[in-house]
Length: 162
Image 1 (cartoon, rainbow, N blue to C red):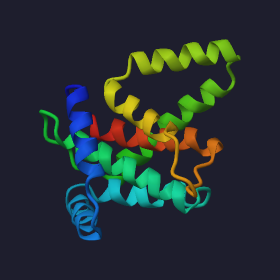
Image 2: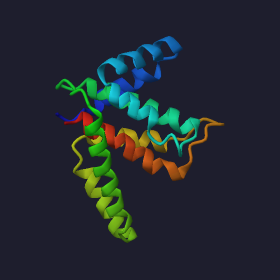
Image 3: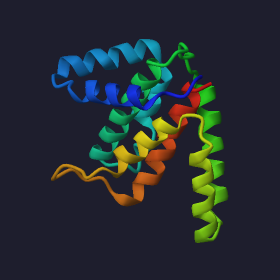
């Protein structure tokens, strides 16, 4: 798949941000359940034992945006199966385990290499920025969960990018 352009990321993000009614949101969830049922189930289930409600909602919202952004690409998206999700998540977790043992400077260099060589840099940038964004008052996104949320979202990108 060709990299998603910054224009598609921006346009889709704005479109998704304007969805205000529960009916619009439900329509999008229904569409996703038909087009990518395993991705939908993954986004709804992953991290449910460690994330609070705000974190689960943010992960789901960003994941929906990523799916919509990638749907705007030049190549039709493959219908992802559970086996692919599991395999991709394991590979991403293995990468994190490898990075965990690195010294700070080595860790930063490794992460920069991953980002700079990533096949969907604009999507990864969007995910990181969305996770790091200042949250609304009363919204509880814990700093210690941002990293794992990024990995789960990278897993979705990796699967859809095949």
